[in-house]
Length: 437
Image (cartoon, rainbow, N blue to C red; front, side, top):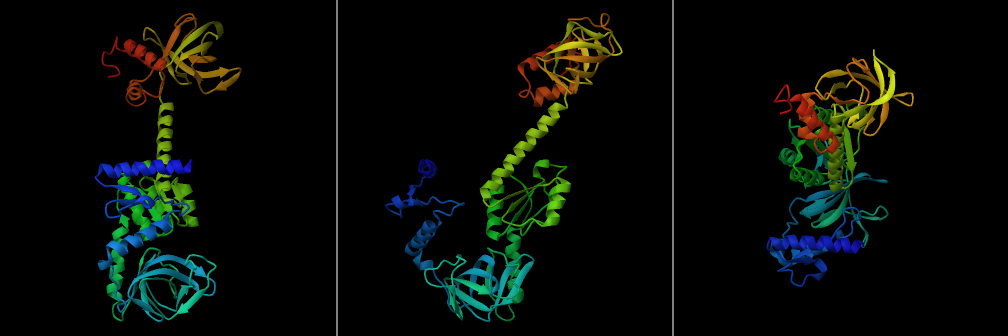
């Protein structure tokens, strides 16, 4: 079943690429890489397909981009931070792909940090033993004094606790600190979003993930107020709450693989700000869209519940419990929803009274729906004078409510309620021809 789903998805992609004029196929079925685009199925959850993707990229790069793949082994080292983590006996370390130049023990390095550029000195350079995976916590390291591109290494250095995964690493020559600092600031500003827009707040653990989330949100036409790397803070929650009055659907923090600080969690509860967390980017977007859908449905329900719905009742003969002040009589709800405080009128358009309360089996109730028979206390009429047993009454729907129902909630009410509203409209237009228009 899973293979069938993958095949179907694969050929959807093949078809979409074909429409754009590209020939494509699953990577292991490609016969001519010069003419066909190779598709590698991969899972963002299990990681399946990633090794094949990396091998394919490496092979294609060597084959078709050989002349452009150049490094300068004598130049200052440059790399990308893959991961920041604690290692027993070493303290905080960074896993780095050194993609250009060289790096020596004792070199000054600059890396991107949560609070700005971090300058430190390389205390140790470690490489995993042959055939070990750099992310495997059980491997043993080989200490080396110098590393050359391209290689995967682990670096131990002081003051790197707040280093950012995904940021660049530079070997810094003496006197170059300020220039490198400006480069890092420019890199951070390129992916950081700060605006006064009524948008969502986005926090991620790496620059690469942040860029991906910004791209996905932009493609989904979801506005962004703040996007930055780092844990969710109280300030982030306050920023999200600031847009609540303008657009409740944007008063949210989207957090990918980051911690929520305790004071931020407490503040979110106080201000009613939702924090959506997930370790799969697409799932965060899906969870957010589902939350927006539920929020809008809840708002619609609350608004509809606050409207006087088109309602028709019949006064049941021989069920008069009290003639007046208030009149208490059994009623059958033929259409709509009967509630206390609803004004009633007869089929001639004359005001009859106001529903004071409802009871069923001796218990007070807040509403009665179609088909229910309940006792209604009605302020205003005297049974036998202004209204008679067996008579039909309608809820006096305010004109503003009628317009809103027809404009926004026509699909939310029953055909019977719509018929009652048309009946009410005909009655009202005898004295006001423009009623409900």
